[in-house]
Image (cartoon, rainbow, N blue to C red; front, side, top):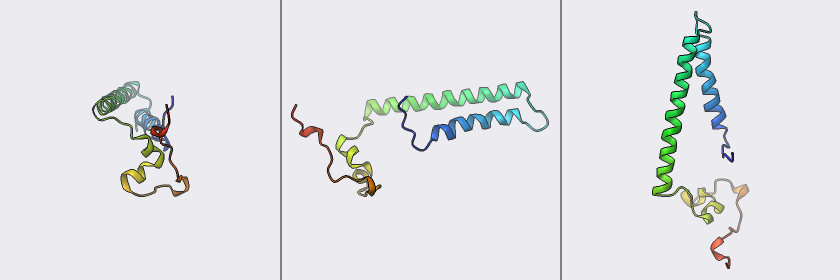
Length: 106
């Protein structure tokens, strides 16, 4: 799906969060495996997903349309740590020369 999830945020927050919510209903003290309680937990999971994904998608689309979400190609190659903070965040990956697509003859 070409997702950029370098810190495994989806697996940690989404999948583990879903399991934790379901497990709270499955293993409720004194009333194990109550289908009504599990169904309520599942409705909560679905509601949280619809709200979170919906609001994030709307925000993403608005930002993309209004101000854009990509940085300049030269800044991407140099690294946004240098562009935004005037620091080199990962010196072992720093390259001396950046590719400038505007300098190509087309």
